[in-house]
Length: 184
Length: 123
Image 1 (tube, each protein chain N blue to C red):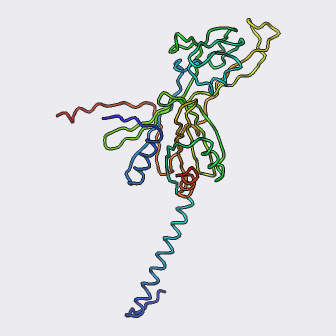
Image 2: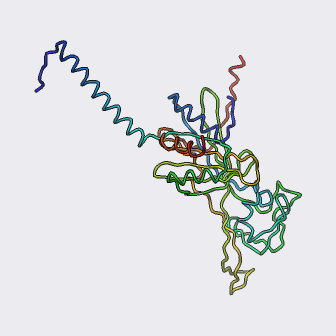
């Protein structure tokens, strides 16, 4: 079964054509949380990096990112980063130490034996707050410290909005079956 | 009790006329409902600045509801959701100094809204 990758514009226009042809079809949607260090602060464009500028610094895109202040990453079991710590090295862009979680969203439609899909990653929204934390590292009295939180994006902004007559099924995994019958 | 009418050459024309009127009225009703309720889908990729798209959407009453940063085709995009009643428009614009910039506008709304958006961005 051939797989065809589309961009958003192509995918939506293909669905529109199917709707206009009165063809019966089903749209599948897969939405999974990933935290596999695919995205780190060094590779982000300046517009996105600005959201992290309270806690980290860099010279430009793909430069090494360092912690500006000590902070706690609340999403990753309250992991502590010290001031000046290397968060994402320019020499190891594929292996960031500070990982940004994301949702992998895949939309697909099966028509006439072919699968047409559109996939994208939606990054979690960072939020930096100052909180009073106590414990072994901060003492009994407690200390004010920067805390990085990641808020998941709302589902309504991730979804491709389709007319009500289009049925969307949520799936966990898509098994791609190779059909050899056409070879005989 | 149903009354029976004998049909001759004169009132047959009248019957046809009434039937046509009845049919047209029903179809008109459906088309009005269609305009109000039935949603259409349209995606546009145009070489116009995002600011122009934004102005065009606000002029027809769409408000920014939410934004998210997405990564697709190896590029970072700012995806914005605009809402008006049950109609939605999402605008995806590439982040950074990419040139040329062609925001992707996906409309799920009435035929009227689609034509207004297309007209507003110079289509």
